[in-house]
Amino acid sequence: MRRALLLENIDAVAADLLGSAGYEVQSLRGALDEADLVEALDGVAVLGIRSKTQVSASVLGRHPGLVAVGAFCIGTNQIDLGAASASGVAVFNAPYSNTRSVVELALAEIICLARRLIDRDRALHGGTWDKSAAGSHEIRGRTLGIVGYGNIGSQLSVLTEALGMRVLYYDLEDKLALGNAERCGSLDELLERAETVTLHVDGRGGNAGLFGADQFARMRPRSLFLNLSRGFVVDHEALRDHILSGHIAGAAVDVFPEEPREQGDPFTSVLRGLPNVILTPHVGGSTQEAQHDIGRFVAGKLVDYTHSGTTTLSVNLPPVALHGSSGARFALLHRNVPGVLARADALVGEHGLNVDGQVLATRGELGYAVTDVSGTLTPELLTSLRALPETVRLSTF
Image (cartoon, rainbow, N blue to C red; front, top):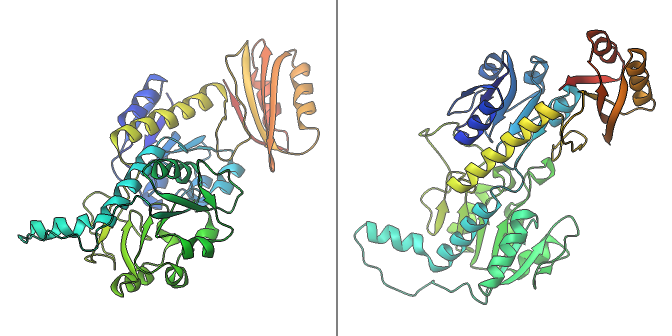
């Protein structure tokens, strides 16, 4: 029986789906460091993680039996994708499942910051009745600047516009504006025009340090700032300075450069205790609905891949969509050079089999050919296919 290891408290629906597909599933609540992960992966075919566990080239290199990694979240920067591809390990994530949850948190925080509800709450819990309209504003008519107009940014754009906000956005790619949103030609233009700035960028290395002292200085006086994307994107010392100076009127931060690994671990940040600052423990996608949907989605992709060879929405392998199989099926992940498919088909014929159906896709340096044959895949044929110099991984179904 194949084994699956699920870390970081992944929703139980994932274990149920993998178990129903014939996997022996082990689930752990916390993340694992590299040494513990290397040990835990002995005999494991499928690994499920969230954002804390780092899957390095060293980890992948020590476990050739690992065939797939599921990131039960949006980001995949915690996985060495180049090493995964070179090892023939498929990686899947959940690019859409928690979009609504993150958008709703951002929307709630924009309203809370504009109304200074956190300060009012703290005062009342402290026994002080502070009923005042000072510093409290409606968001209707205000200008929101969205940095990163992907799945989350674009949906936030639609909802905030429906509440009466004017929406500006900036993205490195030329994204289609939704509703009446207006695209800015540069980040500086957005910062100079928006009254609330919210970050929804991805985890690519080029975004590290994107937002620092210069960017905060360019924002309008008494602006609001939100980051629900990646912790390493923002200089928190610079944010603290601009909040204390009054230049930034409030901030909401859900992600941090360094985050505790497990529930209940201590948390430190220079942003703690600041006025009109909302700090949340990376819970943008942490709703029961989102986590259930993520568990179902990613586990489903892992099952589809390991049972039929389907790579639809894999972040690192060529995309191939398959349904059903006639006879027997093998998938050849190989270096993307001319002639590989012809040599593989010749081997099939030499072993007395006929190709019933075949799908090929390429992605960068990799090619992925899935072949249905009539008859039985013999050990001799599989040995010959593995022996091809271009073969990265051969799988059978």
